[in-house]
Image (cartoon, rainbow, N blue to C red):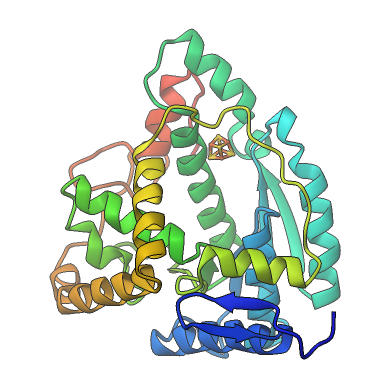
Amino acid sequence: MSPDKPFLYQRHTGRSLTRREFEEDVVERVRGEVERHSMFGPGDTVLLAVSGGKDSFVLADVLSRIHSPGKLVAVTVLEGIEKLVREREAALMKRFLRELGIEHHVVSFKEIYGVTMDEIVRRSIERGLSESPCTFCGVLKRRAINRFARMIGATRVATAHNLDDEVQTIVMNILRGDTIRLPRLHPRAPRLSEKFVPRIKPLRKIYEYETTAYAYMKGYWFQAGICPHVDLKPTLRTIVRKIIYAAEAAEPGFALRFLEAVDRIAEERLGSIEGLPRLPVCRICGEPTSYGREICKVCELLLKIGVPPTG
Ligand code: SF4
């Protein structure tokens, strides 16, 4: 394709962009968001949480252009889902990160918790538990990444959540009546525990169709497997996603304007978090837990499936 030919019609701006213009646009918008919220500085070591999916490729590619070389490290968590074959994605990611000069580590549920996701699902079904596999997976993965970040001395954890993910999460919190969480989702929300390495989402203002197009344009394209444990029932997120897509189709730029409006509201309420006490620590593992809870969610879930939690 000729480099001057339009590559992408950017619905929310009404512009047709060539490959070069689109690439520059994405990099500059991420840079703008990183600077606006001081997501990291030259002294920070940023741990990229990379699954191997297209958004994590985009995260690594864009951040390698805007952060100092040698200050980016990446980790992939292997859940242990036989049919998902994450190892293939992890190998692809390792090769790509090597070209960018980013050190890549791989850790697994098996080595950290002693069980794979497949074993967790089997135990959960045997015990008739109501928690979905994704609840186990999400909670255990967040803990694994945070602990790994602390272990290597990373000062930030960057995840590849895009604009669509971020807006869905905000709408879900509002629909559940959990408006307290809104300021906590803001990029400048203060930390409630020294044990949490601050999490940043540099792609939070980039639409999913843009991360898909960026990955495709750069040749990072492969058929991702479908997880056998994915919840096939329509979840709140599925319903919210459909509503947001319909709103975006009728009013291009809706999701972006919505996130900017929520950011402004959250900024006015950041003070309400600053006054909160530090989070208590779990009496089993010593990691932070929610207010009023003696045992953290990770230990609670592991105990439910009969796996002894470790400190
Ligand atoms: S679909 Fe659920 S269980 Fe499967 S990898 Fe994703 S979060 Fe984990």
